[in-house]
Image (cartoon, rainbow, N blue to C red; front, side, top):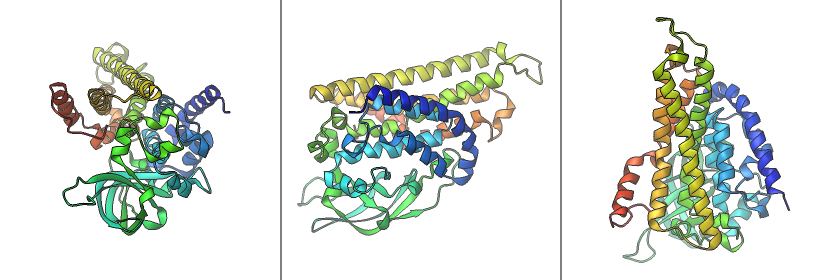
Length: 394
């Protein structure tokens, strides 16, 4: 039996060691438009992709807090690297929710094989014997060139007239899709979030996962993956994979702000930045933002695990509130990062500046649909006043 405390300690230490290495690699990775093979190898050797992977597939089955703490630490050096880890490693957790035959297909020969994703429901689905025919073009598949499989979202038409459509995640092997190299963006440049093209691929029924099963915390994979970890709601896990790296990136910007400004004197007025109230306020607010976001993240996962361990489900109001909590993270971090940049002098306009990179990366992450707090605020307000939830990715 693996000693989980020792594993946590080792993971945390290795993540901290990689921060300066990732910071040094970040400019070249941005030019490449993807993480270097060395970074993926470092993550594999450190065991980062295995943190939430089932133990029966050589994973560690640790708590979400352990995973997101590693992700946030890595983001201090490079948010693109942490973003890819967050998105791709979460798939090792989601695969445990599928029928176990899906995991055998992916990991039967090599349990280190990785999966990318695009959950937007744009696929065209046709029911056929034994499964489905799937076609479509999906965007924003982060880390796709480092992966051998992909999760793709689509609405399955009802089996009978008048029935409700069924949102599912489809698991597709690399041989059945093309990666369309179209990633040319202002931030998160190294995530390599390319488009995925599928043309009439057969996907067996067992290689699909119903969103409703994830919502009800009762998925086919729970027959063999019985730990409470795998009874957490899918919607609550994935959204934090695309929000939590912003917390670490902001912490990295805080550290760079202190280093950059501690001894800096304004060229125009000869004033020490150390004594500038605006700079002091920007720094203080950014530090508090990091602390608040981490505290809420840890609190919410503690409650989720407590419920899963006791066999209880979260209430709808609790889910809706937690969903809104996650959506607020990147918005808060983007505003704090902007204040740091605007109070660091003209040198931060250069793309090579670490605060500039954090600013661009966090603002790009804010564009993700899961990080737009407006509609989740409306849903929380409506549910709190007695309306039904308009969101079920919870």
